[in-house]
Length: 193
Image (cartoon, rainbow, N blue to C red):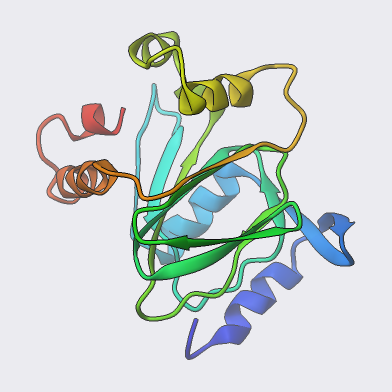
């Protein structure tokens, strides 16, 4: 995108926007549409539950400028190195190495422009990913479980997000998932689950 910024602008210009927020168009991104786009252009990792993809893990494209949007998925942005500004519901948050930002489906947001030094991992998760087995494995108290439960609630239609700064241990887990998937190790799909 650094050498050809018009490519991204042309792509978004073809998409209809659903509303405006502070005078800017807001787009609705569907999980399956994002997956198809990534399959054409990027390296990504995705799981498959009974043939349906429910989780997508990829590196955020450097130098890209993504417009304001909502998704039909939960989005997690994790900063491996560098920094980025995440604009959520009109508020800007500066994320640095080790920070993780979780964004629910009805939440207007965008990642601002990144540079060569910034490595951001995007994880997109459909609600179907959160099976009863998965939910039985997480603690029932704390900010993160409460956030997940709110996200998958059928009565949830309000903006919702959670910033966790200076996380410990997440980087190692993400690297292990990437290594398992890229090397196609036995059990790689189970690791994604």
